[in-house]
Length: 400
Image 1 (cartoon, helix red, strand yellow):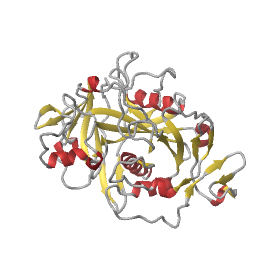
Image 2: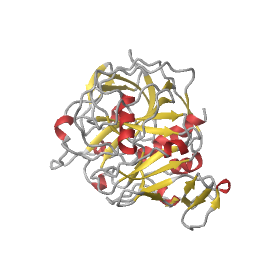
Image 3: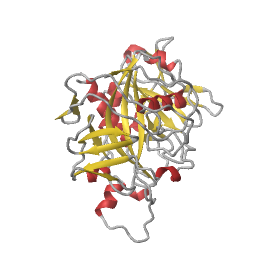
Image 4: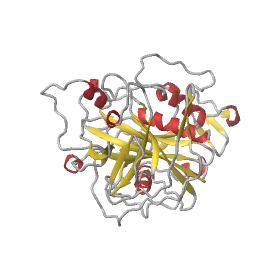
């Protein structure tokens, strides 16, 4: 895990795309051990200090988001033509077109994954391969949803009238899994007015600029969405995995308009949830609510399998709703309006923004967090599929 000596230099909103980074990282050897509901990742040895480098940043452009990034899509297509993700296949570097499944090209079969992938970031491009290669700096799990539209498109001939974006490749995004010192993680709910993935629970994240360091891009997005700036030297971080994201997420919703590889980064703060929460000021144009998940609730959310139609039942050990923690008085309050001593419940904190921008406690039904992706397009409050993947990786990291 690398030391937290990177943080945005100011609170200004910069352009949100691209990445020009050079990985000089120690090799990450990830061994997979399969358990019934958890895929435990083992990172033997220690990692060297981060050396993600970038050229001086400039005020830049802003682009449309991947699923799981709290940004809207504006003036996007003309910059997307630049290839951000390339593959090393049979010793040759090849670009990935918008309509191609990255997982499929790397040899993903009919299984659900994840697939271990060797990767490196060079001159603003993410280079991926299913085999070790000279310069590979990381070996991370790569996964896609079982209903990935690009996998479906690659398995069947497309009708001539099919219209997909042309002259575009696969773009690159970053998302921050922020862990407090008391082992809770932060998710935000995207506003209903966003054109991409509205009303979705995701970690803070979005695009990084071509001249912006990967971690800086994630921390900038964290600051833009929550106003949280982490003090230098008071956090550490490690990359968790890669997610192939599409929006719309299913072909039954319509043809995909966005295609990303998202890098999930775990940032472990030395501050408690209470300390971090005291400084959160959600950006109402992007965030309508936020929540802190403890390990029990995160495990329940991560265990839901998108792509299955089997209804799931709540565990008897789980509360019916996520409640608000009153740290000053030591009580939990929620749907019933009756305060209960905090020691009787192991819950999370949920906060919602009112129309006037003021924050109020939110009693969020647990069933909402366990929703799966609907087969038809609808603004249904749920946790994104990629976020569930990231939560699984976080829990596996904790069990090392």
